[in-house]
Amino acid sequence: MAEETWIEVRLLLPAGMQEEASIYLTEFSGRGVILEEEGAPAGGAVIRAYFRPEEFTSWAQAELQEYLRRLGSHQLYPLGMEWRRVAEQDWAEAWKAHFKPLKVTSRLVIIPPWEVYAGGPGEEVIVIYPGMAFGTGRHPSTLLCLRTLEEVWGGGLPPSGGPWQVLDVGTGTGILALAAARLGAGVLAIDLDPEAVAAALENVRLNALQDRIWVEETPLHALRAKFGLILANITAPDLMQLAEALTARLLPEGVLIISGFLEEDVPALEARYGALGMQKEGARTLEDWVALIFRRP
Image (cartoon, rainbow, N blue to C red; front, top):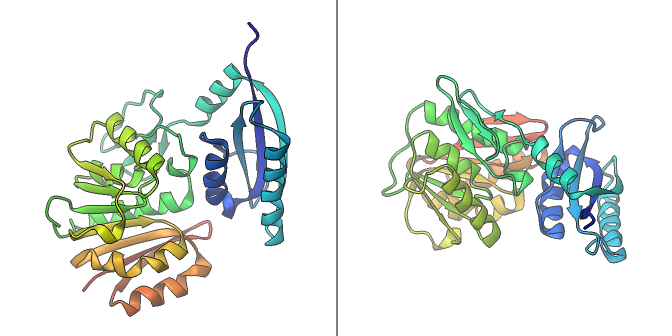
């Protein structure tokens, strides 16, 4: 029997669009994508997505070209697409070879489930199955949240919020919830995407943290509990829309960490949360991405 082949599609696009493009390609292909960390030109990023040959129809090719055209209409460069056939074994090995242990903070190390890693003194290991490339700790906004979380946690535990101390809004793969739990928190992780909830639940299981993390497909507005620390690594429009709901879920002296946006979005977000009485305590930047820290008086 002939070995099954896959279509590997490589997209070259601006580095600032890699998270949005990862989400788009994950939904479009129905499976995870790979972010290449080497070989991309300055300011660019390469994303690999995989399709079965029968899926890569002329319609699918046209849709991908149209997606690049829409990016081009916003004057985002560089852009480009190429594709080739690869054997299933090559696809599987390329997938696994790309994801290696990654130390994301002074304490936290992210590994895929097929890697064996003996954590060093003071290190906390988090296992993430990279089904969603934007939730593996490699994107700047995720790195910012992880580093800011560790910094805030090290400065003193936030106030207790009943059965959970931390709320992770838009949890995705659950990486921020897992990090908070490894630092000693109890966490409620919520997401409206059932696939994200399933991915987070699987990662919670892989890390044996079922007694510390609760994952729910629950809207933020439906919550009534309040929390000492809230994490929200989501888009700027979502952060603007959910500002009142996020701040309402904070305990007095509670801390809110938001990310998922660029430097150009900062003034509007600062004004929005400041108008709700939030006090800005700091900002962190990485590759034009920003994390803001607020405290509720």
